[in-house]
Amino acid sequence: MTAVLAFVGLALALVAGKILRRAVSVFRSYFVPSSVLGGLVMLLLGPEVLGRLVPSLPFGLFSDGMIDVWRQLPGYLINLVFAGLFLGKDLPGLRGIWKLAGPQAVFGQTIAWGQYVVGIGVTLVLLSPLFGVPHAFGALLEIGFEGGHGTAAGLGPTFEAVGWPEGQDLALAVATVGVI
Image 1 (cartoon, rainbow, N blue to C red):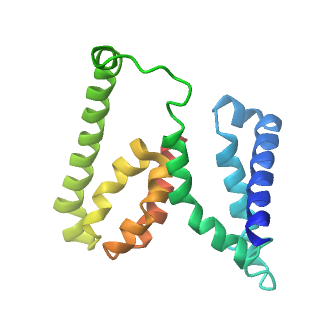
Image 2: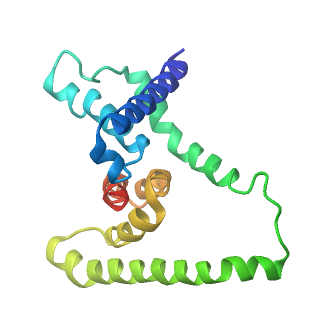
């Protein structure tokens, strides 16, 4: 039953985000996705804001069980995103794929490696020696901007494995800035 309530909560958050997007012209004109607005609504109503303002509601309007269900979802949902990319599409031959995707692949790799080189370089040369930030901090630039929210959420176990669980929160914040 908790899982059902968790999914109902997500659906209501998406509806709230859609309503906000339609009601506020600034959100429409800057193409803020309904899912981001729904996430902001959940942030306000959850333990991070409402739960801290009202001590009698430590998890906000949500239950601890719902939040536990939500913690498990990103790793699974990113698989659904990638699994459904080519459904219903006819795939061309190898030459046709390269003709269509080659320039984008080269551009994407240039951007990705540039973000890695800049992020890791600045981290290794400046941030780690001066402020003691973990070396994994250097990957946040690429994870947040090219990877996005799904990548940032899906890499939570990796950040924990390297001893830096806070990295997922920072990656999600960088991805949010990247969307904006």
